[in-house]
Image (cartoon, rainbow over all chains, first blue to last red; front, top):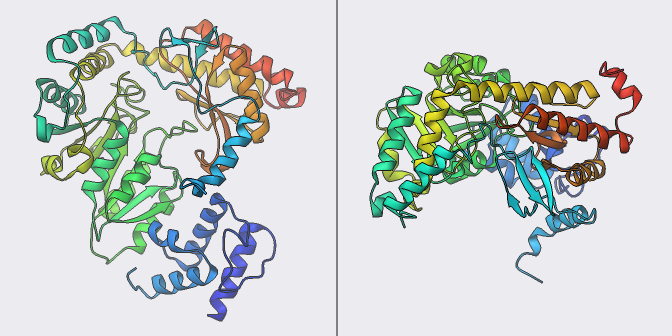
Length: 81
Length: 407
């Protein structure tokens, strides 16, 4: 979980243009002030970094950083949604 | 507390718009006079935002056929073809569409929106993968939710990103269906269809092209982007609409796919809605005939598109990437976009104000669509109004004009 969270923090920083403090319960939209385009750019950056595609229905379920980490772990291990 | 409180963010955004004293989402015409003119608040207004590409909505032959069909067959079918049966005009329209595209099969839907819903939900299901361009029309996104397929977005007009995402699916079961549009409705840009077709061939995916804005607009005979790009053989399904170049309402899908007709008993947006009325189909058939026999409509349309696109670019406006009948002008912020749009309207020019989230990459657009029916004088009047408003608002500065080569 450690390295994954720090990679994700780096990607947030790239997309938002400033450093962020994240925890598992950080709300991606409300706490980080992302609009829908920001979320999409962020998701695409995550997808590139981990060489995965996150299906739309999975994206809809991702509210917090913890949800995102779970989704990335599932998709990297090939677990079906 | 109201049950609709969940939409308060939209309410707030809408109220902000209304504070400018206009309602761009609810423009009320006193009357529509022709494909290119309407009356708005008692003023004759040029229509430059109605997707009426071939200008056939007032064509006397189309009107006559529609009136004749209504007289002889009635105003409506009062139900679905599954329940109320198929009229001769449904069969003829499907036959003509298949013939026009050189395909074995055609199926008509009651709207273009429903065509995407009906086709996408029938083509892919659980275990399949739907690959959507990120800037796809709402009907494509909504159609993707009706089926149970996994939906994956790829970067807009980016065949490499599509390829990468298909590669990630290697070894997984299920079909892959790529969905792109001929002309994207906001910026007027076309899909890089040759390259996308190459990705499709390499990965064994199916390819669907929505030619809603390109039917009657692109291609030697007006079949759309697939024809223009020379890749019709790679396109498995073409979806389109009657509500733009054909001047009526309705949607369709054509294909050579075996078992195509099974969609008639599995596609819910086809089965559970009233079929097109005879009068609508009659004018559509006549409009399709004109599209096929009057290539001048297409050349007039492109002449107007280039005149508007080149004229706006030369003044220093930031337009979309290519000259097509959709010409969009980017505005730097929402307030200016709304005020600019309002002043254009007050000067007698109607077009679309397109704001996020309806636009890609959060851009604010003054979106125009030209028609073959616009005269050169109307295009020049539109340009003059744009220039006048641009100057009055201090937007068309000397610097901007110089950069565009206008000074």
